Length: 203
Image (cartoon, rainbow, N blue to C red; front, top):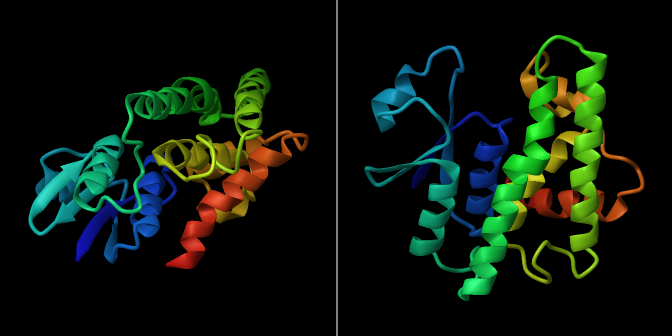
């Protein structure tokens, strides 16, 4: 049995949870108290989540964990076997942090109309790229779900999910209240729902 130390609302934690579900792996979730990182440090030697415990082996960093899962449970694959496909996944991983995630960081504090407007504009500019990519198929690289989808969709979800799905007063709830996906991006909204259907399959 795999154990996932997690803060569920975090997109990096969500990515790993969805990867585990996609591969059909049994796992338990241990919820981490953000005010006390001691248990995480004790288990992994560092304070950040997610952390995966596999029969005494500890893996942390969401990017590293998803690669670990693909190496040890290859099917269904999350990373393409060819160099071009891997580069495409890595490009979407950079996009998630630099283009989609960066605007969201502008709105986590006190209300600020200017910051909110910049975040909204940046988020929807990134969503335009998603919308174009999704013209070619149901997922970012075409017909098959890959690590690219699991990395990007949890960040895009802040703009599509009802804010109430996130804990009251939490940074994710604040972000979801202040940044919304423009209704014209219908493919992007449907894609987020498609990726998150993994939670319903093995919840």
